Length: 97
Image 1 (tube, rainbow, N blue to C red):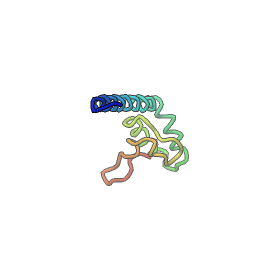
Image 2: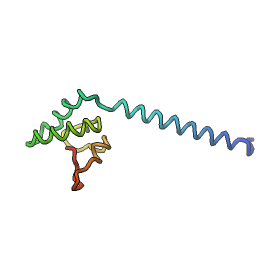
Image 3: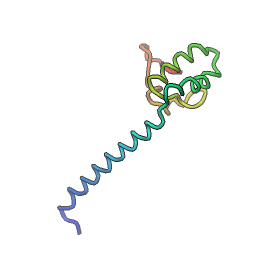
């Protein structure tokens, strides 16, 4: 029964919904960010299986400080932390372990 007069309200409702959705997504992402003191234990675990512990820890801590997250597990899972995954060296290789 809504005529042409209902369309502006539909657009307004959609815009408000989109704004709320983006706001809640930002809040959820912020909850997953690590505090600086949480980087060392996460990086210690992530680098525990490598034979190159010193460089792994150096780069993991550097990446964690910038990205405020460390992917779960000993390797892989970088898609869980996009900044960690997308930070590359000058040669285009992954910077973060």
